[in-house]
Length: 142
Image 1 (cartoon, rainbow, N blue to C red):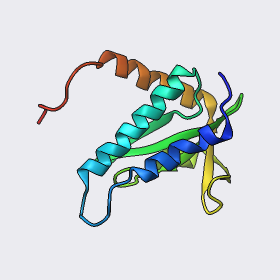
Image 2: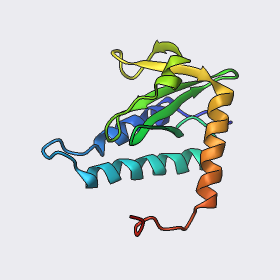
Image 3: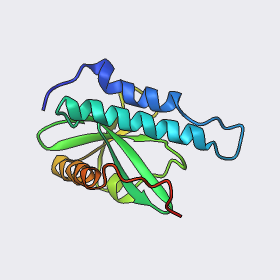
Image 4: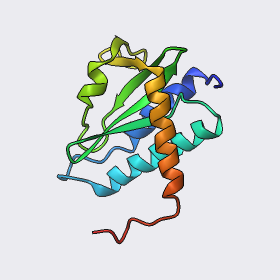
């Protein structure tokens, strides 16, 4: 895995928050889709750079997803930052196994240090499913 500059590591969260839906209406679907497009763009950049840092992982929670960004990766741990997408769900099982540490970008938040192998396998599984379903449209699914 290659190392990324600090500005690149911190950019995913800033980009996602800039694309956040407006809170003037109950739910802004265009803003929600913008956030997911930003996440996919960040994932593509990190994939192209052959690194886990900058990638996002998602976990099914209720009727949505808890989304986390990988901000640091060591030999044994992956450090995740929660991204408030949609309903801003959090994955209790992921955060429950995590070692907490300070977030350098937001002093009021924390990073979740989880086993690196767990995140590697999760990202590989998401990539494999992405390849399997690439090119298939979900627009007509009801």
